[in-house]
Image (cartoon, rainbow, N blue to C red; front, side, top):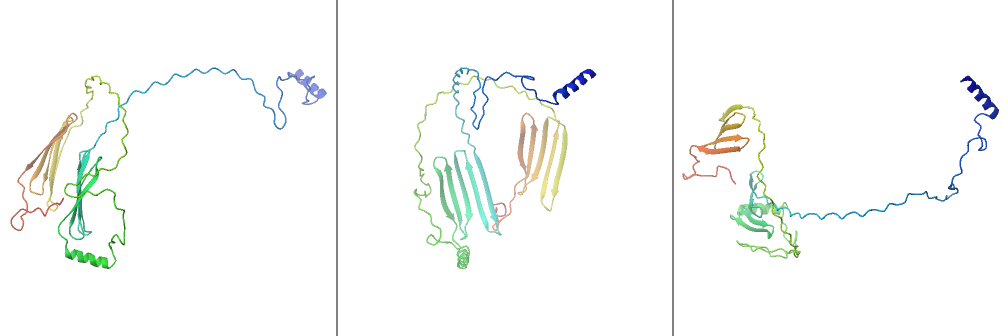
Length: 300
């Protein structure tokens, strides 16, 4: 409004622009109830706090139910391999079998003197590792002379204990002989076991129903055959499927003249099932005296 603006303008001129008004002419405030802190170390004035609420005691946690220890799952295994590399003169092999508790094995190494070192061993969690070392064959004089010449030149020199490595004598005797004695290893004293409460019997659970929903696949049929004379590869494969069950057969020509035939069926419910048969009679190359010789095949 124009009149209000003119009145405010004259009021500012008579009083002064932005003039501070003291409490008796302008704003006024009530005096605070708490003193205002001042000085280098002002006194801390506590503010009123609400009364503390009494804490309710927490109920004790329920005891954990007994859990039986996990079962010890042992994994049996079996393997074997052999290396015979003539240029590098590496000739060794290793094979082992285990039922999950005891492992039995044997490895062979061709020695520089012409013999073969054979190590037969057993190992288990109770008796540890026990080995029997034997040697097969005779020491070849020519090999020993060749090794002596190499040692005379200072290459690959074997250092006896008084000049080379030395080891402390073992505290336990090393087993030897055909049937080595089992030497028990020192073990810490057994801790007394607390009796475990018997596990509650499991309620009977009926076998779960198979709710698998099977979707039939795509039918197919194929066959191929390979007969390459230079590489002696002769094999074939054929199969047919209606989307649910696959039936097939493959043939492989074996080195002994027979033909290995594998006829199989496979489906989503029964898995893979195969029947292996052989056609023909095996033949082997003759030795110098008309006897069969296996030296021309694989060595294990």
